[in-house]
Image (tube, rainbow, N blue to C red; front, side):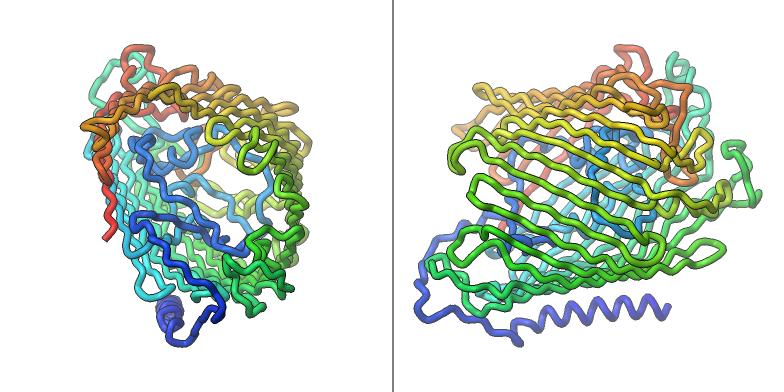
Length: 637
């Protein structure tokens, strides 16, 4: 109770500090600055992420007001359409097109099957608006499915803005014990002085996920042969199981420019920059629970407590990071030829289960470098190394080169070359786990991943690329849902093409990918995946409204899809049942009237017209044909 009070007090104190900043700091522009009165668009909305200061100015992204994509409300499919799920929105998922590119080093618990339904610090959006902005989204589907999302941002004082993002999902599902119930929320605050010499951002987030688990249907033949049409009468393998995830977090980041001069659009003087210092603090607490009031159902390979299952893991993280950079955006509004950045992160982690609490202390120095000799050539690289507990010796290196083919304003596209190397311990879960149905305590070698890739993009019309990765000492869950390590090398080749082509009023928007695994049979992935959407955009009532009917199809080739283990919320190897080679067709109509967007959609319109083998995960049929409708509405006052 004392710890909860301390965390709440820390958040309130930090928020009060932000609110007091305008009275503590003053900012002024030089007297010789030329002030221009520019008429600003009050409906223009943009946002930035926590890496806003990387280039020396706020990296803004435009808020998407386009009509296309309105019908895609599922947070999972918005981020990764190539995903396998157990048949209902909000449940765990596995990527069908994994990326082996190296990310940041450091402690990782290892279970990420529900991450795309969580608000994470990296994905929190800080909005920039003239006065106020809000948006409401609502969707209703079959079986009383409801999705509600609202966001709000407002300027409180000069340079000070507050906002929030709130999301609720409740989906009972077609089958017994398949319900998902989610609540996600974050509150944001930001303040920047007038000359942008000092800035601070902060957020407080809450995630609560409750997912019922049914272990899949007991008899597949009832579904494939359509012996029973009422899905609520199907026997399922688990009748009293549930997964819960509860998470709270707080984040604050300050930056300060050491150079005093302003960055005026009319100032072409080349100053010597002393650089920028920044400091960030992050706290995160996540609790993962698996509950089952009937552990002797026969679904699990072993049971320790025969009365009830209550598996619980708590992960706490405290992170401090201090950085120095020489911002690449110079006072003459051009990018610096060479940009440097050095960072030092301190992590304190606690992992608590039924039997013990483990503590980790880590120091992670990192550096980044970018080189832009001419506007059409840009090179950047970053590297890090871990000192401390558990992840001692983990390291990563990433290199990227962008080549603009022609002049910046008019070019033939952008060519990107990318390479990465990482040596990382597998997630903590793969080495240490204590539950009622699974227990292990082992030690694995570092995983080594080397990836090389290239891509080409042309405006918003074409994006294509190829990546080859070599993975050594890969950690995975075997056919018994227990961890194993493949102590050899294998390769992963991935090629993709994304298109967005408009001919007259007809648009063809597609995602296509091919991949292959070489040197092992412990990784199963579909060879080909495709998602194609075709829609017509037609103005109505002299342009006062837009009408957009469309059709979309998703398909992947047949393969031995990973099975799902609810007790660990993880996917594991299986070699007996294939899924895929089945198209999922949706038809929809989107309508836009001023700032309101409305959609109606009929999902999986071909259900029942073909063989009933529409599984993404063995034992979990995908939803039948269903009608959905919803709307979103923006407000600017």
